[in-house]
Length: 63
Image (cartoon, rainbow, N blue to C red; front, side):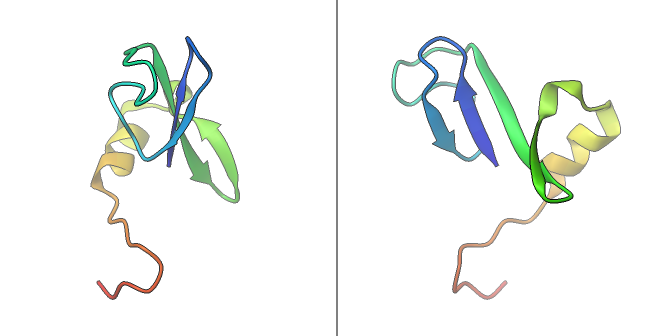
C-alpha cells in the first residue's frame, strides 16, 4: 500500500491521512490489486473495506 501526495507528489509507504513530507491531506491511496498498483478512490465501498481489513506483515515476520 502507498500514499501519494497530490500537492508535492511525495510517495510514502502505507495508507496515511497526511503527507509525511509536507503535511497535506490532499492524498491518494494506492494498493496492489492482481499484480499492479491502482488508485483506491475508484473502488466501491466493499473493496475499500477489504483494504482496511487486510492483515499486513513485514518481510520475515510470522503472523
